[in-house]
Length: 400
Picture 1 (tube, rainbow, N blue to C red):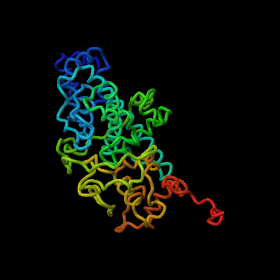
Picture 2: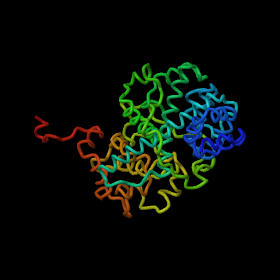
Picture 3: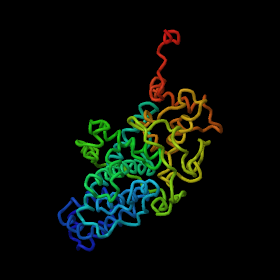
Picture 4: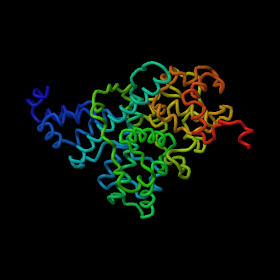
């Protein structure tokens, strides 16, 4: 196949590269021969933009664009408060003047993120299967893109940290000092679900690297703010479903299209991860306030692929349980122990098949759905993550 391609003139080779189905494929192709690599360098901006707009959904494109602008020293926000108040710019294409070496590194990074996201999905799926039942279907496009988005959120955090270190951010000294000492627990992601998505990715990063950085490691060397390389056996071979609709890649597909301001985030919380979701402000308008009976075309008012930034059914049901006193041991629970199951990624039908999303007309705290969530962890682990002491002794003994 490669020998046939190399018989084509460079103009047609550039066209072939522009029509690669995704950035991982492009990464493989430009390393297939030195000539293809040279053709890429000659048309890097056109090629990357064509693939980006044809295969990457808008929220991920926006983060990729932000990564590029930080590396170029042209990040759009001039202060940390301004960044918190306003959404990232809508990506209509990367800067065409971006140097080819930078874009080559970006393509390699996108391939790395893609492999890590699939590895994360695979491990989460295996954990679910070990508890909930036999082999489930492969991840859908929406589930894949949610996982990819989670790793780009982590990369964006890394880019800001490196931007501060390499003086790429034109921010006031006080803002840079705040960024310098920030960790994933204290960094103000725009919504609680984005924070939890990032932590789901970070837990896989820690699992691969064998390191669990303490607070100081997030602010000082040896933490290098780089994603780990996936194991070689996990780098290729993943099944990649097609987008369910061209609208999934359209720039204006978001039902809640970029409000001028987002709800303010609460003060930073201590510890290795976010605290109970009940302490956070309500989700923006458009998020489902409580679980509903089965919805045949995606939970809520639109299919899940239409808004990848919206919380999954697992997140929405968890928020309801954690804030419902009638939920018993699930009330006040932190999300931490459920991250490893990938509940921020899975779509409604998968959660329903596992018994983790209600089919009945009324959500009953004593019903099968709540009980299924309890069985995933067991009461001792639930109590530990809810911040309560597990009652291993009698009340009389505790008084003594």
